[in-house]
Amino acid sequence: MRSALPVAITAVALVVAGCGGGSDASADGKISVVASTNVWGSVVQAVGGAAVSVRSLINDPSADPHSYQDKPEDATLLTDARLVVYNGGGYDDFFTKLVDAAGANARRISAYELSGHPDGENEHVWYELATVKKVADRVASDLGALDPGHRGTYAGNAKAFDAKLDTLATRAAAIPDSKVVSTEPVAHYLLQAAGMTDVTPSAFAEAIEEETDPPVIAVAETNDLVAKKQVVALINNAQAETNVTNQLLATARTAGLPVVDVAETLPPGVTGYVEWMTKEVDSLAGAVS
Image (tube, rainbow, N blue to C red; front, side):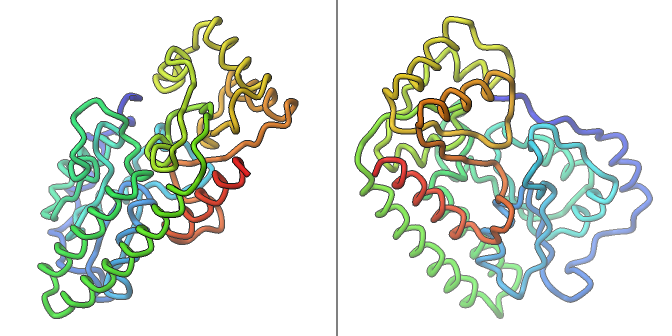
């Protein structure tokens, strides 16, 4: 697991001190929701629809979320929020610190807590469809408590969203079992759902995750798996580029091995979670065919 993202809490606290008390809704009367990333923001939007105003602190598809630097306006957003949604599991600790510093009196949803995984397991739970369903259902419940008049709408939206995830899970499970190598274990849970085994040497995976240089022997072993096409694809975190991962990508291209890009925020041109995951499942299936 990488270290938590940096945050200047003191600066945020100063901004909050200059702000008035938070309002119950955004200026347009919608329920104000703030998410740590646009992945979770898109899930909230799918459930809340036109009744919510969703802002995501991390939404740049070209950025690495692990290097996020907070902005003064983040404090205002969080002070006004009635619901906040974040990943948890050590992935976005910066977010809860910001929420605490802003004094936000909001309902909180942690995806990792809902996942039921013990501390220390893979934190990239936005790639676990069952956990995303739990988040959608909790969002519907919390929005319904905040806005009882639309409780049925939120529940119906969550049910429709969950059904689409069930379809995706079925499609992922139909992908033939196979072996892959990953530049970073971001898509760990989706690979599990697809019956794919990540055979990346543990020393390589752990070093990349911790942003350190992998041992030379681990780099050689990983490149060998790719160069000799002992796997069906290279799963590449497009938002975590290093000299080592670039070398691995070059090896894959030379060998003619399929590369499946994964990410930590919604890719350019993608507006919703289901659209994104559909493309990811299609890419995995295409790598095996």
